[in-house]
Structure formats: structure tokens, C-alpha cells
Image (tube, rainbow, N blue to C red):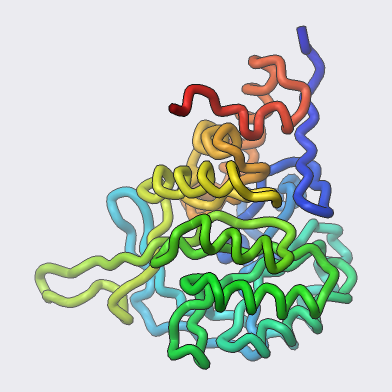
Length: 309
């Protein structure tokens, strides 16, 4: 019988993190803000809010709508830009010792490549996560992640710019999960984040107008978890690189589903808005489950799904 505390260390490509619970991009700032009730140092790692080369003001309000089982957002990738991140936030992150993955995005390959080049040699950053849901201006506005060939070219280009661990955060909209995943791993990424928000909308029936200023937004929360769980299972069964699940985690049981289905780590996102202690609760649940099922390491839990026909 295994009575000792389980080993929660999480191996993601070239990285070893103390546990598999991560903060998803856009839900815990840049890692330097004071977040009431959240001890970010207990996280396996924090993925920063997306960074672009230049600051972006984001979309006008309203840009968040609560739904019956999740949240629609149309923030518009508001961020401070690379220069301010490097000058004001990265020094604080180095002092804190927080494990940080920087989420980056651009509208052209050149912008992604420049971000990777500028961030790739900086101390205090463990890796980069590419947000490929952004419009590819040169291809007519189609998101990079929706065209496997374009995605492959992008990842290969960024890979050439840095030896830093490189994750690709796949979009669930408009592309078969395996096609986008394969395009990414064949281009040299070290891990796949599956997935991002799902395109949705809400309508104010009295005004007969969209409730978001730009009409549509990304749906997160419990509603998307079964959809993303399918994608995680499908990609994890085939991918030669680790899969990081992201979508609708609001309890330890949700995180367990993802890990059992094959994920190596789990990003917690909008669920923490209503419950800032969610990260710690998920960690405690994972530890308790592994003790109860006599699992000594996270590898024994990840991909332990049985009974699939």
C-alpha cells in the first residue's frame, strides 16, 4: 500500500514543474498583480496574459457576458506590449521566482518571430505559449490556428528563433484537432495546449442587439469542458509531445477527467474568477485522489483511462 504523499511533479517537454496545475493565460494577469486569495507561487506555473509587440487597448465595453454555464469574453487581447512587459514586469517576476510561461500573439509571422527572438533569451521566463487564434493579416484575416499549413509554417518560423520551450495553444474553432496538433508537433513545438475558447454570442432580447460590443466572443467555463475533453483525449492519444488541458475546470474532479484522458497538466482559467481558491482546491483533490488510488507519481494518473471501445 502506498501511504506517502504522491509525487506531483509534472514533466512537459524540457520542463519539470512541481505540480500540474497552471493558471491559464488572461486569468491571472502578468503574475505581478496582487490577486486577492490567490497564492500564485503554489502554481506549477502561471501563463501570462497575451503579449504583443505593441500595446493594444482591446475592445470597447461591454466585453464580458455571463452565461448560464460559462462566460463570453471579447476583451480584444488588451495588453501592455512587449517593451513595458520587459521593463516593468519581468524584473519583478525574476525577483519573485514565479514560474512563468509567456503567452504571445501577433498578426503576422514576423511579429511572432520577433516576440520569440526578444523573449527567448530572457532570464525568468520558462517558455513561450503561442496563441494562434489571432488573425493572419497576410492570409486575409483567417486565424493562424485554423489552417494547419499556415500553422506549421508559423511554428517552424518561431522554433527557428528560440530554443526556449515552445507550447502552441490550439483553437477549437474551424479545424480538426489532430490536423492542427500534428502541424504543430511536426514543426517542432514542445507541448500543446488544448484548447482555447469557443466562438459564441449572446443577444439582449429587449434591445434586440448583441450583448458584446463586437457581437461575438469566446466562450469559456463548464459548458465547454466536455468538448475540450474530447479534444484532449484525441490529441493526447496521438501526439508525441505533452498535452496541457485548458477549458472549463471548476473543480478537482474536472482536472482529474483531463489527466485521466491523457493530459499531463491542466490550466485553470475563468473558474478561478468566482473561486480564487480553485487552484489550491484542485491540487488538494489531485493529491487526495492519488493517495486513495495508491498512485505514487503523476505519470500513473495521466492517460489511465480504461474502457474506451
